[in-house]
Amino acid sequence: MATDTKHRILDAAEQLFADYGFPATSMRDITNEADVNLAAVNYHFGSKEALLIAVVERTAAPINRDRLERLDELERKAGGSAVSVEALVRAFLAPMFERWSLGKSEPKILKLVGRIHAEVDQDLRAKFIRQFDAVFARYSTAFQRSLPGVPAGDVHWRMLFLVGSMAHTMTWAASIIGTDPRARREPGEILEALVQFAADGMSAPAPKPVAMPAGGAR
Amino acid sequence: MATDTKHRILDAAEQLFADYGFPATSMRDITNEADVNLAAVNYHFGSKEALLIAVVERTAAPINRDRLERLDELERKAGGSAVSVEALVRAFLAPMFERWSLGKSEPKILKLVGRIHAEVDQDLRAKFIRQFDAVFARYSTAFQRSLPGVPAGDVHWRMLFLVGSMAHTMTWAASIIGTDPRARREPGEILEALVQFAADGMSAPAPKPVAMPAGGAR
DNA sequence: GTATGATTCAAATGATCGTTTCAATTTTAT
DNA sequence: ATAAAATTGAAACGATCATTTGAATCATAC
Image (tube, rainbow over all chains, first blue to last red; front, top):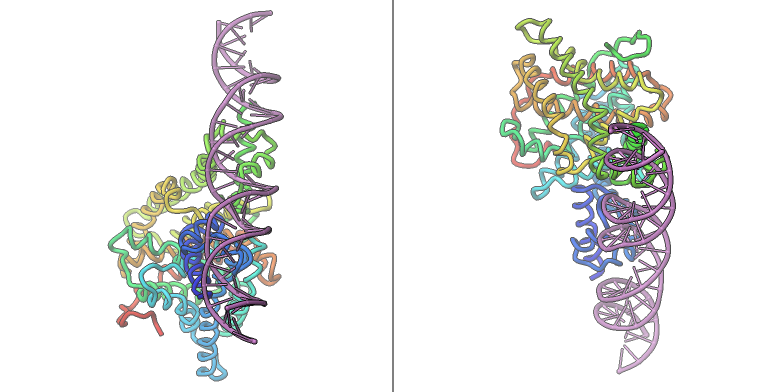
């Protein structure tokens, strides 16, 4: 069966990219883990980079589709008025956490996406950034509508903060859970904690203008 | 001069690790950039990994020292009572942003630290994680004191969110600034925006318990 | 059953990786 | 100045990298 090899490669690559990152994972690591021939990756995908793109496509595409659908639904329900900030934050975050909960045990998708947000270099990132950009743009305008007091540029930055919290959580949640027993949480609880944190952060009053010579906030 | 070579290697490595990450940067990249012999890195530092540790040590140590000093100062001023959350957040974040503002133009330190938080694999990370852990622990107890209504475990998670926002901002601030003219901000303004966001997020009410079968928050 | 295309396989390609070697050179101490 | 130590230099080491090759094997269709 042909699709079997492709699937096994995608699964192995997803796992390894998530655990060790893209540059640190070799073709041989992938093909050994997938138990396929070394040449299979280049045969089926063309190159290592193309494999990464395929992995991201497979994992991120349904998440982003889900995000957009939830936003559609929220805006439909709200009629013409603004959606609550918390609902927007939850609609943006839940599609990822849900895949975590539904998955077996390891949050590989989350780690992978976390890494992609954090690790991939500029030029490679540009190849699949557009997929994220569409989501980003839609949510950006929605947030702007829901936060009329906050300048558009600041909303932009706050969304960067939001994505950062999410990505970092994806990457390190497993080790955090393993460290402090008091911090043990179910995925749903972590989502709720992050929603609470990010919703309040997004809703903060507009920052006061900074009047400083040129050196931070000493 | 001996120290000159070491310095040039450290500078080049800092720059390249920040731009391309640790695994993607080769010894030859570093020695070419530093204009020193290829063997110089192994002679002066022992290995590539040891060089990374030295780079982190040089850039992160003063930042973490600064963080602890500011916390000391805040707790001293507060006497026995709790420090304000916003002050804690600012004390934690400002030492990094300040180095950005004071630096020439490129936020390489920030990108580097951002990457270290996000990219380095488990075992290598453990080698210098203790340095961060000390800071993390001190701020964790301080935050717990200032947030009496929030369970300790949740404070732990919120600090993870905070670090994530910071790390992600460090990594992507440059590209964000380059993208949307409305999002153009001075480093001091970005710090203030992040302080506002994170302080309100940290101060959010304690999350309601989640009662769900085992599948996210649909 | 035989031809055709898709897939797998073992092996090799050239490039690049981190590290080592050892002689040449420079610095330091006497 | 001379001996000793520290540093630099050019070259090579073996290992591993992503990718390619061409024959072997498989599936499918006629």
